[in-house]
Length: 62
Image 1 (cartoon, rainbow, N blue to C red):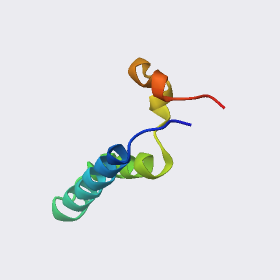
Image 2: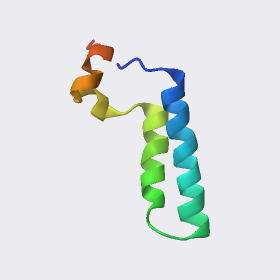
Image 3: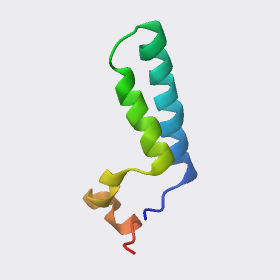
C-alpha cells in the first residue's frame, strides 16, 4: 500500500471531475475517460505508483 499526501488524491479528484464535466457534458468528447481514470485512481489508489522508481521509497509491500 502506498502512502501519499492528501493533496495528491485531492488534485486527481478535482482535476478528474473537471475533465469529466468539461469533456463529458460540454464538449461531448471521449476525453472524459481520462478524467474518469483520474477519479478512479484517486479513490482506489494508483497501481502504477508501485512500479515507478521515484515512488518506490514511499511504497511498502505487505
